[in-house]
Amino acid sequence: MIESDPAAITHQLAHLRLEHRDLDLAIDRLALDANADELTVKRLKKRRLWLKDCIARLESALIPDEPA
Image 1 (tube, rainbow, N blue to C red):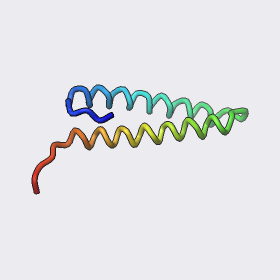
Image 2 (image 1 turned 180 degrees about the vertical axis):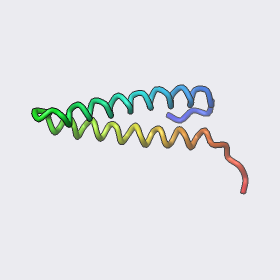
Image 3 (image 1 turned 30 degrees about the horizontal axis):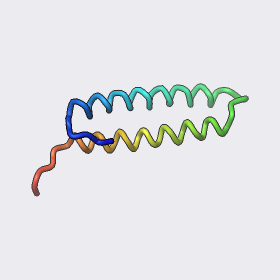
């Protein structure tokens, strides 16, 4: 999943951040709904956490390796 091209990584980051934001909004909407399916909310939260991990991995891939 991690590519070496910084432009591709930046594009992927933008896409993942957008999806993460959309999930945030969906989870917030479902939290306000008393009839919301708990399993759906849990799955969305799990997906959001996975996206957060992917974003962190890609952000670290953008940091150049420098010898100590």
